[in-house]
Image (cartoon, rainbow, N blue to C red):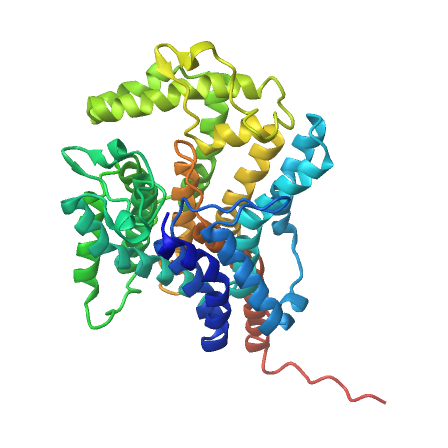
Length: 467
């Protein structure tokens, strides 16, 4: 930690307010979240008694909400929660139930819930406030793509020269140096907390870009044609050397590719994609499918290094879920209580490492927390599936919404193996939820009324005037 990092962190909320003063409000929100996620130091944390930890993303969220209250109060006043906001609201109060049932007290529960509101609920709310329209969804999708393109030269530099940018700017490395060496080269970390977070970010931008390009939605950016910057993005994503994220990208792109075949049964395919994550959680919690059956195809497709990494995660899932099932409804609460007490920390000669977000949240907040968190992530995709036939997802008018659904799907799948929170994804979740749950049904009703007026028979007599 150096002087530059301290100045940036302390001054970030005023910077967000200045963005609102100088830019259109929606653009200011995107600038604030993208700049913070891409460039601010991830490991600089200021502990505030009774308040959420002051991090780069909590500072951004508080700055955006403060600026909205100052400059755009009418938007907050006009906002009306809808039924599809309920999963996120229930997820944000999960720590309250966990703390009370574990004897930690209401104050602890309120503090933990407030932290969850800042890290999950507030980015979702910002997405609902500013981006729940056709244009808003398009802007969020393009922001994620441009964020990936901004990282292209930085990732290529670190893939060649080793991850040094964060150390040069902020004076320290974000993570264990050994984790940056992969497959005979360097895995970029740039300004994120881990190379896995960079890999997932680049995979999300690449998946989104490929879908938009094949839907004929992309245009030249700063004079660079789409085929050129998409080629650079794909190559850079490969150099991130995140095999799990690349595998998830191929899976999601394969699901999306099926929608382009005219005789494919679209609706069941998308529904199956939605239930994959909950089904995996059920299978691993009940141990219906042994981990060796999961590792067998991975062992054939990947090398021993990647197989070992997956095996480490699977070995940790068993003790974590067993510990969670000791208090299945609301979990064990915070303060490290979610970790199983295992002598020596080893299971089958391997360390128990809480890598997967779903096992951590399951052990912390029980089935209630796991269900509400998963519902909050997958409900926007389900709403899009319900209100917009997947056969229309390839239409250029709706391809941006489908691209955000793909980003949410990637993030949800990654939560099965890693624990990399991403507020930009939660912003996209709020945008897609408002668009699919509110804008699409309203547009459908408007089209139906217009259709009835146009097709009204011309020879039908006019109504008699009032007497």
